[in-house]
Image (cartoon, rainbow, N blue to C red):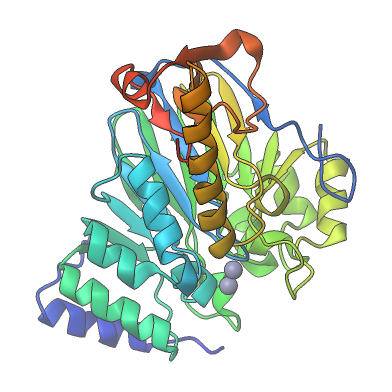
Length: 374
Ligand SMILES: [Zn+2]
Ligand SMILES: [Zn+2]
């Protein structure tokens, strides 16, 4: 697609309607999947969590900072609205402080309009790119109605700086690309000595521009570009990022063959631990700025219907469990998440804490697992 000069015009319209524009053990290639979790002990008031929500062949990432800021990067496909909202509710998200819409493809802004209406983000960052799709039009309308502040997607723009946690734009570095994917807003999230590079669907051309611009790219976690397609994660880029973990957001059996074998082999060859939403479900990374751990919530086999079935099943299981035994719930001392006893969360015995009732778990400061919905 050609450069879309019209966003300026659209945003001018937005401004005229009253919105401020601010100036300011690897797994994967068919081998064994990575371990379902790597736990670390982090006190809740120091925890930064990054949730790569399993939305099938799409992206949706929730960031929760130690001072309770909620940031959403992308909003899944158009059918993922209730799944995303349910997930946010389980994480006690009432409003969003910031939303980043990486680029106007349906698998990134599909449910954005609904999410914007429900969570009224204070700020939205999106690239200077347009699409004629209905879903993009709906998104723009929701942005206009929300009266949020628009932040520019320019390299060096700091989208969030709490003193500890910083989210900075690394791309796009140009304003004219053939593919909408290259307009992707790439952000680097840093906290203490830990960092995450969140790349949307940025492809090799954008990766090269980031390298040429000398952007800070080295990160512990790489959200692999474009669902693991060979269009992205070039050798030079991977070397510069040099991640310990790579997270791939895609759906089993997707029509594009993502993630591509070549990319999985490239990551494995670089000794990177691969975590995949298609095989492991939602991936949650947690850090206190020093330690870094993760948990995976298990594949739900689809982006919507399957998860609803799963939670209904879990609910009936947990009620029967409650009736014939005490200690129906089990919490993870590290993650402060509680589960039904049946939830297969592969928790280490030493991290388990048991609760007789749901209320006890909630009162102890534990959050419900988004997979088993205890
Ligand atoms: Zn995509
Ligand atoms: Zn895309």
